[in-house]
Structures are given as structure tokens and as C-alpha cells.
Image (cartoon, rainbow, N blue to C red; front, side):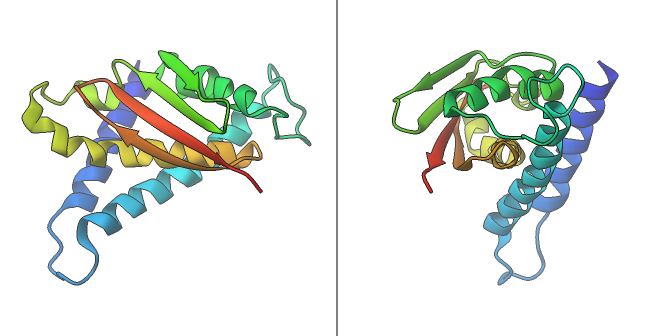
Length: 167
């Protein structure tokens, strides 16, 4: 419980710091902040993916950090990685069987603290960028190149669309 609260506070502070007004109007502003958050998430996802795959209860030996099937890697994210990060499993995983997956979280912990009105929807992307990077980084460690985007239709639910890029 304390770990989850500490992470939520740290995440909120990262977003606030990176979203603070930039005195240099030509520096990229919000797009740069989203990229920085995504990059931080990517590096954390790589490390967390490796750590979770290499624990004693792991399904994978230390030398092999790749799943054979995409869907197995996505199940790993929805169960093991999500539990390590948010102390819960993802609520849903869907696929079109062509390399596109949608991961559904009906009460995403980093959005719960936000209000539930429609005026807060435009603020949601900055709270999802880190997690998009996290998923992408973990998949990279598992041997899959991906593009991860997030969407919110109503708070605190969100969807992460994962597109596995074929080599």
C-alpha cells in the first residue's frame, strides 16, 4: 500500500514538474513534456520487465527474455507487470489478431484522484504518457517493438492500444 502511494505521489510530481510553464516558447512545450514522460516510462518498463522475468518464480530463464507469442507477452503485461505497478490486474485484453491489442483498465490508479467530470478529460493524457512508455519499454525487453497510445472516454477508465511492429 505504501509503495503504491509513494509511486502515485512521485508520478504526480513528475507530471507537475514537466508540465510547468516553460519560459522558452520555442522549446517544444507540452509535446516535449509528453516525450520526456514517455522516455522515463520506457526506461522503467525495460528494467521492470527484466526484473519480473528474471525472478525465481518466473516463467523465463535469465538468458531468454522473449516470449514466443505476442499474446503471451501482453498477458504478462496485463497480469504480472500491472500487479507489480498497480497492485491489480488489467480489466481486459482484446486483439484483432493482426498485431493490435487493446488493454482496458476500468479504474486506472493514476486517474482515480482526478475529478470525474468531462472538464478533466483534456488533462488525462499527461497522466498516461509515463504508462505508455512503461508498456512499450517492457515489451521491448520481451523482444517486441511496439507503439503504445492511450485514450480516455470517461474517468477513471482508460484504454491502452498496443500495436506490435513487425520486423
